[in-house]
Each structure stands twice: as C-alpha cells, then as structure tokens.
Length: 624
Image (tube, rainbow, N blue to C red; front, side, top):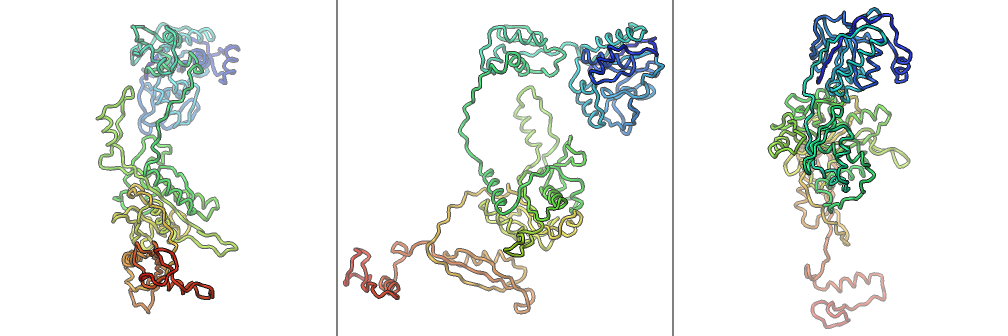
C-alpha cells in the first residue's frame, strides 16, 4: 500500500436520491445507481480515475488498520457471499472485524444502509500485483479492481476525497468536517532518470532537431532539467510505468511518430547452421515420423499422483522434482522429470475420443534437480548482472536433458485387403529404439532389465557404451489398469543428451557382386541375449559379412531344458573388385571365363586375350 486517506461526511439526508444527470452518466458507463454516497464515489472514480469506497461511519468500531488475512479467515462481502481468504490477501479491519478487501470489494459490516447519515470516505492506493492476485483467486472483478491492477496515481488521493465530499454534500446535504487522515508510504517526489539528450536519435536512427526531446518529455508531464548533453527527467506521478531511460525514449518516438523511423534491416551475420545436437534431434524426430509415429507437445507439468500410480519408490530419482511458485494449474505445480506421463495422458485422451490405434512420440526437456539446485535468486533489472550473480544463477538451475518418449497401443498394421493386420507389441518398442539409434548414428544394445512402469519380464535396457540411457518395452499390467490404458500398451523413453554426438555415416557403396546366404543354428542358454550372439557372429564372420539377422527362436525338449536354439541368416558379399591390385587371379582364369561365356554360344571365341595388349595371341606369358 502506497497511500491511505479517510475523510468523513456527516448529516446527509438518508432519503436523498442522486440527481438524474448523475444517474444517467453512470448508466452510460455501465454502472447502476445505488445511493448518493455510493454513486458519488463511482462518479469520482470515472471522473478522475481514483477508486474510492464509502463506509457507514456509525458502524465502524475503533480505528482502521491494514493487515494481511490469516489462514482460514472468511469475510462476507457486499454481494452477500462468504469468501475464504488466504494470507496474501490485504484487508482493512477495525476492532470488530474486516471492513473491506483492499482494492477489491467492501465487507457487509460497514455497508451503507437506507438509514445511514454519516459517511466515512476511503481513498487508498494498493499494490497492483496483490489486487490482481486476489481478484483472480476469488473471481471477483470490479471497476475499482481494474484500475488498481493498472496502478493509481497516489498524488490525487486527497483531491479525490475532497471532490467526493463536495459532490456528496451537494446532492445529499450534510457537511464535510476539516478532519482528514492521510498516510503515505513514500515521498511525493519520484527519483530522477538521467538520460543522454541524443539517446532517442541514436536508437531511432533519426536526427531530431534541438529541443524536440525536451519538448516531448514535458508534453507527457515530466519535469526536465537540461545539463549540457544530459537530461535529468522526473516522471509524472500518474505514469508508474516510466522507470528508466528506455521508457522515456519510447515516449519520444511515439509522440514524434513511429512512421518516421526508417525501416532498415540489419545485416545478419552468416549463420553457422544447426549444432550437432540439433541435427540429431531433428533426425530422430524425422525417423520416428517416417516410421508411423505422430509427434505431440504435452504439457511440461506432472499430473497429480502419477508416480503413486506407477508404484515408484520414495527414493526414485524421478520423484525429485522442481516446483513452480505460480503454476498454470494449482494441482500441477511440478515440472516434468520424465516425458512418459505426458504421452500416456495423450494416449488416454485419444482412447477416450475413439482413436484406438495410437503411435505417439515427443521430444523435449525434462527437469532433474541436482545437488546445487536451489531457489533462483532475483536479479536487479536496472543493469547487467555481475559475473558472480550470473554464475550463481546458472548454478541454481536444475539439469534439463533432452529426452525422447513414445507410446504404442492398438493396431500397428491395419487390416484390409492386404491382410489381417497386426497388433502393436513389445517388438515394435524394441524396433523404435533401433530406429532412434540409426538416426543418431549410435550403436544401441538392448538387454533385459527391470524398471517401473514397465513389465519386469518385457522390459529392455537401452545401453550405449556400457551406460544405460533409457528403457523400452511393455508397460506393467497394474499400471495399465490404474491408468485405464489398453492392454499390452508399450512405451519407450531415453535420454538423447546421453548419446554421444557422432558424425553422419558415409554413404553406403553398393556392391555389384551377388550375395551368398548361410543359415546358422546355435544352441545357447536361455539367459544369453540374442544381441550378444549376433555381435559374436558379426565379429567372427570375417570382412565379407554384410548382414546378420535373427530368423527364429526355438525352445523345446529337442534343445534341452534351459536352452534355446537361435537361427540366424548370414549374408556375405564382396565389396571390392577382384583385380590385380587386390589379389593375383588364379592361373588360367581368363580361359575359364571364356568357357563359361561360351556355354550355349556356338560362335564364341576360343582363344584367350592378353590383358596387357588386349590383342589375340597364342604365346603370351602365364595368362593363357
């Protein structure tokens, strides 16, 4: 609160009615006439812009005092509704109780009645943020509140009281004693702003004539003192938005005409393109979209009770979240430490709308507090922060790695004339991890693991260079039931920032030689991962190996208890030409090729050709 004033008016006629000209002006402004005292305060508010309130002086007990509300306190306002207050609400109270919610609405305890003869006029200047916060929470908006939330000139509070008292005496009789209560928190003079006289010209790129800047600043009501090339400006009391030189420059440019400022595009420096991390993020998103997934943008806040539905332990790192002081929704104050809740909510929303076949993904940042994370310090905006302040600010921020998450449910391949289709299962979630790895040019390894909210027997750890970067698989049946999701719902989440930034692979060179396929069946223990066997085959097959693909997994009495048979198909292909530069050809190879080429050709040549001179001969060196 910046100012608080009171002035009494006694002996008014309780039967008086506001004149027609006053009622008509109020109605034209959308305000209904109530009584002379209330109408006078509303009229003065519209006339000079200062809200006021009228109390029944005979119902006030003791002195007024301004205080904050206590937890659980309630008050009955002028609309006869009981409202629950919070500690941030500012109140006007007397010895008997609350008489008004500061800047919002008066209380019924000191309301003007039909028989009221003595009035106590109140004119105060409240904090705009406090008034706005209380109005939004109570859903109680008024003409006075709209003016308070945009700031009121504290210099006219006494003038507003005098004008209202005079108007009330004219329309309802009574007298206004010289008694006046006036309290002010700060001095009347506002601090000066020192500004270079040529600052508007330098910012706008326009050569203003001498005296233009001073004249425009005086035009808005500011006091200006010229000291050489410097201006000392005192902003007017009714312009609380003017606090620095940039605000004064804006006023000068506005009054001189923004159309006079030339439209000159700055020379943009040559861009360096996307960073490797940005290229990787774009490549992963494009690859998932080409694989049939739809990208979504979920809210970055956690739903209430989501981790309890997952069954996470109290010490799980994902439970350590960062809370927002002023959240968009009161039941979601925590920033997301994982992207899965957002995609699962989107899946549930699609299912409720009748879209049963869903494949969604999102790429975004998660917020993970660290040991150095603490409340962010408030910095002074009047100047550039110091290096120490910037360092403290950066240290207080939580870690914000980029994650990718996806969810699968329903049919992965729709049915139609081409076939019966296929339902999404855990193999699709595993393949999604491989798609991400290929897009990021990283070799991902999948191995069995356990992590909530995934199924313990159908969950795979995503491993890169021995480090777990994420999980993929089928969700736990209990989690699916609690969240109301379709059965066998699959999900994936991994950290893109945990993947090493790799250079793009060179374009593959297509070999003109045919491929040779070889099937291999190996009996191993059931605990041996198929990926490990695949890598062993790839490492031991030699340089001609092109592809190793798992075809079938068999378990049964033929392979013994605790074992499984893995059937692989190996593809071999020579990548380079077999010539003199690589390996000497066998003796007589040219004649052998001619015999093969002459199969079924009666006119084919029967002599060999010298590779040195490309002419027919019968006495060449050893190349016959």
